[in-house]
Amino acid sequence: MVLASGTLDGNHASLGYSVFTPGCVTALVSHEVEEVAYVIAGRGELRLEGGKTLPFEANQGLYVPAHTWHAVANTGDMDVIMVFGFPYPEYPPTARGDA
Image 1 (tube, rainbow, N blue to C red):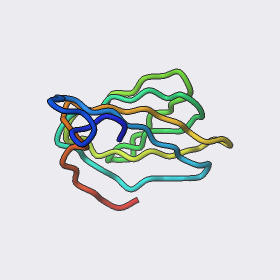
Image 2: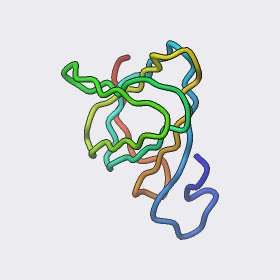
Image 3: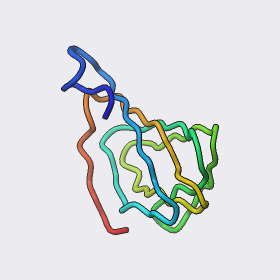
């Protein structure tokens, strides 16, 4: 996390970034609040509960509604770099599932 309650006083939102190496697939997560993201580099797919996938690539924005199970998969041959934010003062309460 780049901006969160630990680094910014009085904030109501947070900002962070992630780097996903080629072949990486995260575990499923579900946040209590919505998430927005911007893909700086790379390509991959957002994997949703039920087997639905949403491909993404550099210079695209992503929106994940609150309580939506999702995982990030890097399906390309370079790092995926993604900036993400939440309307919550730190990383929000999150349920975690299997990859």
